[in-house]
Image 1 (cartoon, rainbow, N blue to C red):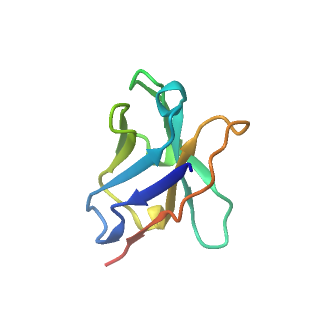
Image 2: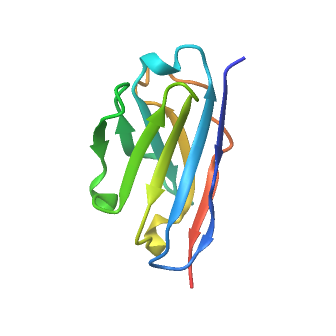
Image 3: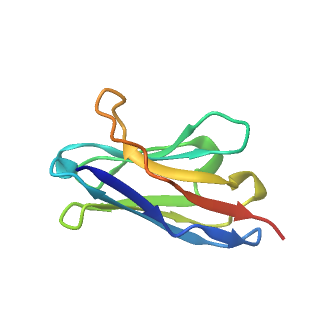
Length: 117
């Protein structure tokens, strides 16, 4: 059974850092471009960053450009999101999944990031 489990969120002050991790138990993980998404209260889920199977970043959303980095480990089937200089507007639940909407995994619970003083 395919599972997606995100972790690493928490409460952090503005300007702080967090590293989010996602473990994907899927035998085709290494064959697909992966992504991190986020959803703030009352807003639609939005794409944050994506990464090719070769561990090269393919996309970073403008609001977080310069403040995040995405990486993956195909052997461990993990996708990480390193976030720096966090802002209150980064507050959201963060999810990982495939980039391709036609090959979508069951969404995990997500991990909550709250940026507040």
